[in-house]
Image 1 (cartoon, rainbow, N blue to C red):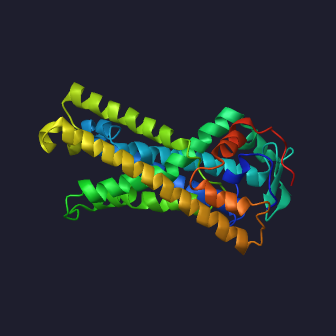
Image 2 (tube, one colour):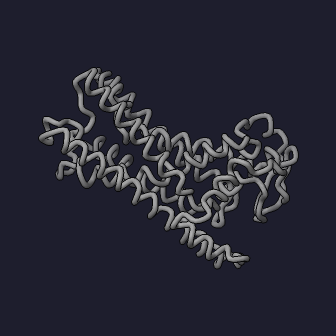
Image 3 (cartoon, helix red, strand yellow):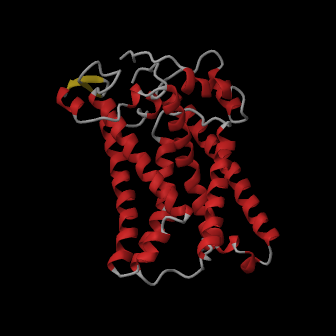
Length: 302
């Protein structure tokens, strides 16, 4: 697929899959995640325990899983629109199959995401959302299996399925977004945003604990861990792990960029390969961020 001048296009294309299969993959993942989320709510309602359905919106695991589901839904629709030629690149109704345009003009009236027409701030928000999708699931899984898992496998099949879906498959889905799109390195400028999101969740969880006398996680309860000082240590440790995971994910993205550049015979010219390596340490971050914020809304050249 030829390069595009639109900063959002790398989120819609893949070096491994043509646009239509890529869209299908994302939409299948979205369907699975959203179905799991809905069943998590509906099952307690059918069992007569609505409080558990409400509590599902308190856990960081569930909030990030809902976020992943909607991310894959929007990205899947956006990729489908890209494949069908809806948006600036489509010029009115063609679609792409293996780089060729196919005529499916009727779909233009049906699909409304049109990511290639987004403004700079919408693109910036999407970049942050992508960063959370490729980093937060790893944090959720590490904290669960390393801190929260009781050590005994679940006797009820439902509990086993839910926990595998939300604490194992979430990492698999996150890895899909690391490997398949043509995205560049998430900017280091996203680290403070990740920390702000974690602080907002912490405030939310602590507010819930004070209002309803219900601690979401045991390590937020000073009575369970001994003191507020230990709670602070837990929180700081999780924040540190989140930052380290962000850097690790950047390294995975860099590996994908370099590997597929070679496999597809693409040449990184003018020191771009060296710049990519430096990018792991944060050099050139403003160029990446400004590309999403201030790039001109030029039409893609097919």
